[in-house]
Length: 238
Length: 238
DNA sequence: TGCATTCACTACACGCCGTTCAGTTTGTGT
DNA sequence: ACACAAACTGAACGGCGTGTAGTGAATGCA
Image 1 (tube, rainbow over the protein chains, first blue to last red):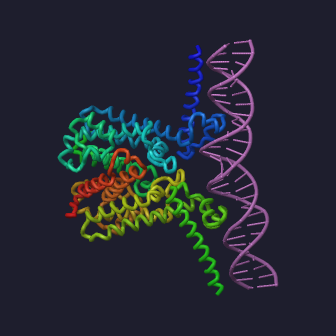
Image 2: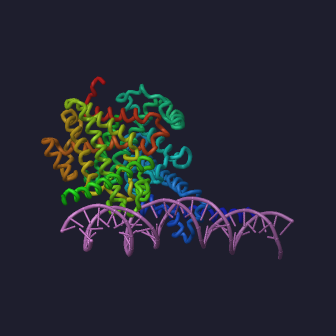
Image 3: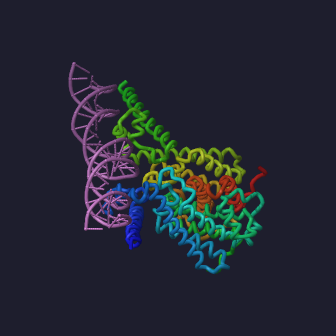
């Protein structure tokens, strides 16, 4: 029973921590990453700002945790969209991933800013933690998409010049395990594909595209079709 | 003489305004956009924070002005790099622009964040102002690069499906004046090229690439060569 | 059951921030 | 010399992150 009551305290504690995160995400959704203030969260919870320090050592710690959660949600979403396409439809899987990424970003612009902008001034994605994990999954997913296209793409891209040491150790290890025979050049291609998705999206979400382009979505779609084409993937009829 | 003394006051005023901007840029270079605080600027100038309100109505106003200045500096730089190449070397001019963009961004990471991140929470590039002007020049430059490549690129890109109304009115007008005969599809291509430059750069500067790529510069260079190739431009011997 | 400990939380303080405003200084124009 | 306008100060307001001392209740042990 002592165990049970101890669990009870721990349960309450975990619940409070979750409430903090939930309210923080709500505030972020309403006012952007800067609206995540300990005082505002505490106000919303009927608490004092200092009380939060019992759950997170610092505001940045809280934000780091949130980044991990939001990033994980994003990756879950794009992976699900990819997996809704048959495994042999490499083009469809790539385009689904890309389209889901944009859809998610437009639905959660503040989340996108939280992940890819600097929520914390001078913030750098820490080595470990859930953020790094989600980024790893994102990279894995992109490499997977490229791996599926590699039979078609390998001819068009020279795969000398790249070595495993050019890339993150963990990522390289995972890729070698998951895709035996895939050369390191495929990782380079995957990261470049990431850049192509990220570029137009970041420009759009930060308001740099709206003054010059009426339909950023069409631009993005064109770009992704071009990307698929450059990978040797001919999109199916749809 | 009345005129001269009046000029003198105005000169002092302009000088103070410039000092404010200079110190603000210095602080930004040291501590990022968030380090631009009126109090810190005033402290550095031996003034009171309130005094700055005689020069800029609000902190955001000051930051907006700075964005314009920094953006203009960036565009000056990339234009100069482009124009250092002969007019008939379309590939070289494109690559020089892209390389200068990255070099500038790495030398002024905080400036890049100021322009393309959100310095002001929820900040949106205003319609008028020097920021819009610099962005216009950037777009013009990109369209110019595409225009030079258009004879080689037009075959590979379908140029139906895009209309002038898909793009900003001012941009469209300028393009039609500057490049008669160029179809609106070229603007789409230019904006997509912008995205390809911006994507890898933003990922790198916000620290998302460093955990997975040892040499983001090589990645960027590959990407730009691929871009040039997709435009039908074969880079010269170099 | 009684008591000591632990935990969550409050209250307050410190120093930072943007912004406003009444008052003071300073330099100009007549 | 005087009046005036501009430049600037100093203090204040509210908000922020962050510590710290204290309080009260729940917990674990005798």
